[in-house]
Image (cartoon, rainbow over all chains, first blue to last red):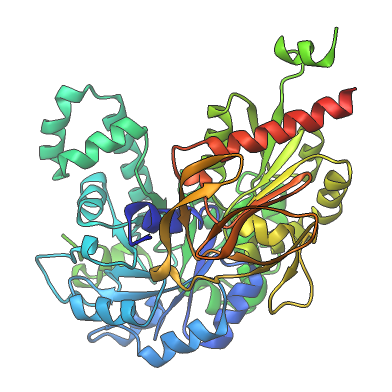
Length: 293
Length: 208
């Protein structure tokens, strides 16, 4: 019997495909998410838009909240650790969390190195803006990727930029001849072996979800259409007027992302979505996506 | 011309669907194609008409159930079963097939005479790979278990195909095949091929 193998860790993310992972801050929200058809929940102390508003240092959630959420639902529970914070990650692993997000939404603990995720039994998801970043995270042992987008803004523009960029770069690598890959690896800052694997498979070796700015069912469907394997929704759901209805609408729009009549129906009367932030108004130090190396 | 020779000439190509509401759909489709049959992702209930057999893939059973209800799949899936066409549930798919689920009052499809327990090997950190002997399929099958269920109890007409540490992890009852693990996550297509054979046999019976 072998635990923590690549197949077991990456396979867990494969089972989430086509689904929606929702940020929750307590048991009640977790149950609403499960009831709406979420494939997993992310247990947090505060959703990204509140982290943004609160300022200061954002850390791993209080284990009480994570435990409360784990006890409330039967779907997998994810939790966030700070970039490079070995102990936060080990604590979450010891608690039996199903997936850890080494997340730029929290204040980084290490401004040079990410976690060596290969050493863990629990699988990790990491954010990426381009293939270099994606491949470095895979090289460190990430079993799942997500776009970084710009968390807590309710603005999809950055997530769109990131998924388009990664997919265009994947297509390029797949079409390149093998003798060109080493130089491409140098240019991208990507491990050569990961690029070889991408070329062999014709795609990324792990699933890539959309995250960071999904605010409406149409946003979720857009990301699926651009090639995301599934969607993370952070602040959008429980900041909306009717979270249960909103959550169900996002799940359905993700499943049937090309059924525009259905998405029109789903989008009716959802109330005001989160206000959102125009990206250019964010100060450079407020851009979470620039965290990570 | 006999049905079998028609099939051999590719005139009646075997078509197997994969329920594509959520989960590991792509992997099952690749595995079916590797077994030489046509594979179709089933997103709408009308599409069930086109296929000779159906795989219920791994994923999150609660999510799939919600979408089954939402898109009114339940009656059509049950009708598909009563027409005698084979169904294969892997992991969450097995949970959908089972007649009883430990801790729940109601089953989902309730088609296969087994009682299953969800997440019965523990959380994700306890997920594992193990080498199994599967009756009539393989004696060295690498199986990937992810937050897997297991069969706690099997009815008298259920043939137990495989056990891991004393727990039933693969079984067949007539047209229904179920397993706790994910055959679609490895390159070993022998269990999928076993299901393809079930579908081809059922199809021949219906044609005769």
